[in-house]
Image 1 (tube, helix red, strand yellow):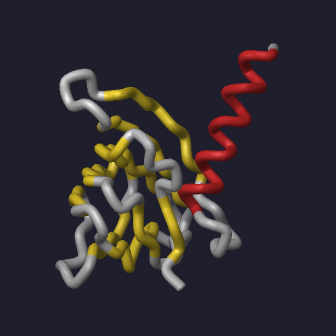
Image 2 (cartoon, one colour; image 1 turned 180 degrees about the horizontal axis):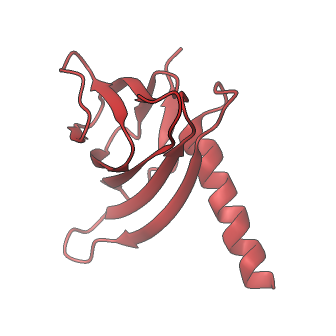
Image 3 (cartoon, helix red, strand yellow; image 1 turned 180 degrees about the vertical axis):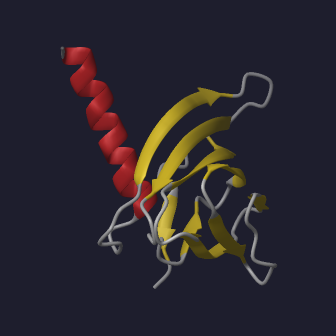
Length: 132
């Protein structure tokens, strides 16, 4: 029972940091993996699934300054735009320091899910910060 409480608390804290305090409709975020990369000292890998309800969107945001991110849509249709790039749909990457200006479910009727893989400095704690 105590182990479940620790896992639930950890997932809830991650969901709040990823979705940001600005969004009234926070996406459901589930951490799949968090591990130090053994052959790259000071670097870690974190993988999360992000579930979007129909029509749901994230506010414009940035990620941890050291983070390189690869995202892949698992189900549904998601629109994403990073910096001044093209609007992406199936998969995309984000370089460190990028602004993620669009991240939304393209469907008003169907849910969508993506897998985001972060490679970042182990000491970076806030994965997502809303752009003001």
